[in-house]
Length: 226
Picture 1 (cartoon, rainbow, N blue to C red):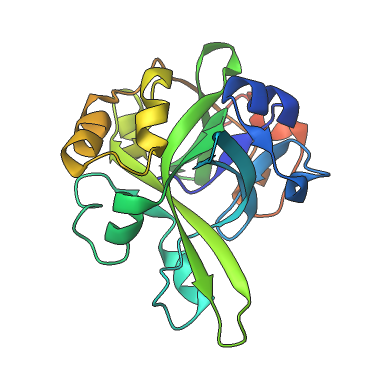
Picture 2 (cartoon, rainbow, N blue to C red):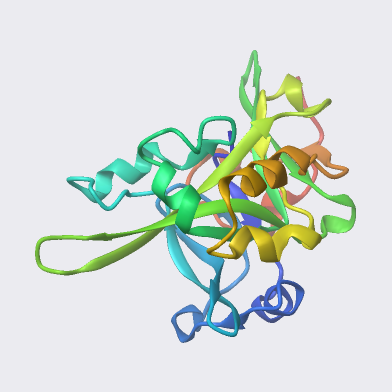
């Protein structure tokens, strides 16, 4: 599972790394240290002539959903079943995206409470999580664009915290992942080959447990007191 993530890099660097133009809707975006479900975050999709980064709300709302509240339960999609589960199938086949991040959080149950850990690549390098997206309209025609993050089995040593991690896609498959015409067999192969890169983790302050707490110190390593 991925229940919180970070994107602390400047948006220009994200755009350069993922070769994406920036949507005007992202004007004013600032580094994020504790992105939570139902928050908006930059997401990259394919557009005619290239890629575009724009804001989407985290928590997929299928087009047939009665209410946007459905998205709060659909923040992650298991890669093993994404092609068959009704909430995700259409998006997986036709609307895929890259979710830029430089870390995500998982929690350890301790005697004194839930201890968060920040999980990241060496040097806090930027990476792209495999995502899917959907467009939902209400009865008045208002539009809501949302996304979910694909997950896979966690590697050691993360498995002691949680048995799932985001699917992190290597750069050489970004284009095929985003392309509308990529067939199911190729999509499944991309996911299966996307072994997690080298990941590191360290404990961080428990203030991270509170959704809405945003501070550069969120990712700072702390000493455990118990």
